[in-house]
Image (tube, rainbow, N blue to C red; front, side, top):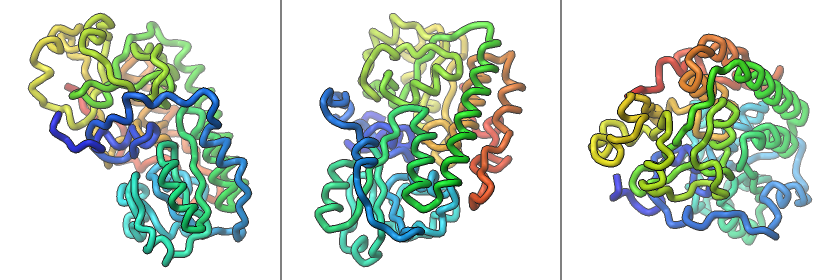
Length: 344
């Protein structure tokens, strides 16, 4: 795993962090110093301050999988004319013209499509600048926290001409989080959790990541929650000292030999068989900042609090779909977290 190319790390998590959120990626030096600049406006604020003249139902290119999902969630699927090579959900977007990746775009192809708007996410600011230099409208959507999902539903609704649908979806998502908090208050304990973004080099989810918000909302204690970086490096020494109650690993780490070696095999979570693996990219509902995190959070909360598993499953099955959205905002039943998440 250590030999993966430089911009490849668990892509589904890293859309929210400066690398795309939809595939297996490898380590990148960008993670070492990705604190937000203290006097720099956020991407969300920058996007909101832009004046964009567009048609009521603009033609949109999405260069981030999370934006593609959010657009579909507010009923704007038919307006998407171009996507990134990593956009894979819902399945209807797979056949849409591929315009680029997370770090680059085919500007000639983009120009031929003549979109009214190109949508990007945090970490794509440089690419957004190049697109603007080609006289195209570009907006960068911030997805640094769990609650940004609701804000982004509203923002995407505004940008796509689906304001009501965006507002409704955002309100329902906020309600889901409130209902989750009520359930989690019944928990017997708050386990210490280590969320492994990538094992070699070891990287985790810090305080400035939406994954941190997921962990805490599910009633866990993030052992890296005091690090004000989205996805920092984490030493093995610190991991041993934190001695988490359970560990969440990326799918790619499954059956890797290092888990049977020191110091991993001395960790309490490993010895007690409390290591859990995310599913493959197609079925992972936890790592992308979209409405599908509801399913992933139900699974994670059930791992943290087995006594609440049934109640959390019921909570996750309640649809948050807006009245006019093109499809359910939650995955189909065959993707239930009971079927796709893997335990050691």
